[in-house]
Length: 502
Image 1 (cartoon, rainbow, N blue to C red):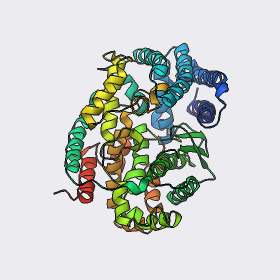
Image 2 (spheres, one colour):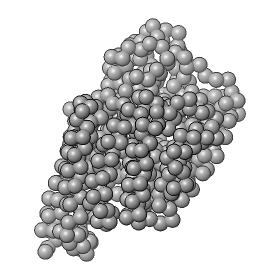
Image 3 (cartoon, rainbow, N blue to C red):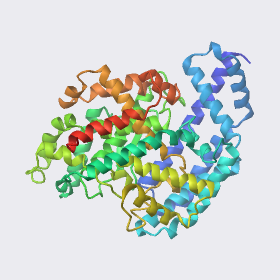
Image 4 (spheres, helix red, strand yellow):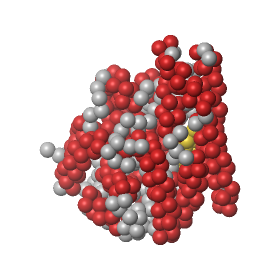
């Protein structure tokens, strides 16, 4: 074999695998947004079949031979070629360890589990989902055992979403974050509470949708390459080279929740849109490099930009034009304070950005205990409530607002949750570098020019797709390693001003 032929063969396999993954994503998108309820069993079979083909291609003897040969000749490859080889080497080494039947079982359990979770959530009855969860946890333990791990079984699951990360590494950044957030929450709780009652007034759904779409366009969301629908749980997925799908929901009582959810998913979409370009299009590299970096973009747009005074200096008059009655007695300053109100809440996706990290730390600790066997599924609801009391000082009244609020465990996404809070850390570090690069960034946002931020993010992060590993990308962009102090300082500075703290 020679290098050019080997590269051509790997690139052909890469294209097939990318198309198969996109087809699977399209089926899953349809399942979440518009599939008839009686079609579940057939849809599970369809997705399982595709995942079986993907497994076969990733673990073929040809794949192993190509990777071995190209790694030996890696010095003559470009960065993009080396990244494709690196990505598939990781995929190959991981996938060949997993029995094919386990892959199919996990795929089928995810489809049926998500349906069970939806029904249990609607009836607020954990018992309707507990058997599915027990089955999924057993499969994920088998998966982690087959994959191999370091200190903890859970490490194999974290590494799936944030390559190179372990539970001890996550704890090392979460521990100081937990202390600092708890101190800030205590300081805020001692201040007069902010009135945000105007956010709960009746805001017509169609106007909410129009406002959200306008902001997406201003962010750079291209509706000729992407679209938005509604789903029980907001998410973003890539179903084609120029086909990014996001969802939001409008059944929340607070008008700001759907808006910030839309902006959050829009941040994910911008990353995926930018990652598919002339260098990466049609390859495995045309996607975000890791879930933490992906979350850094969604939460940067949602919180750092869209909850800022500068953002609302431009957008509040436009929102007031759409909702003149609802906001007739609300000043711009009062609105900004309202959308930044800090108050422990039951629902993670509605949490303020100060207490949000505690929601993630709770799930991180519970996941570790479930996977290790230190916590049983039967005891999970009580353990959830106990930790909510300990970390946030509140206790859910129902399963729906407690242990059933997230879809992740039904889909087997154990190890995913930590990336949300890690995303805050990555995002604040990226943003600080962007501020230094664009001295008038605040003024541009206040003038309604969101493309300045979008262009910088595309140049430094999006266009690279997954060419560089996440920690290497962070170092390339900021010149530093991951440091939680940037996010801690950002929170303290912002909320000291909002709550007039000493």
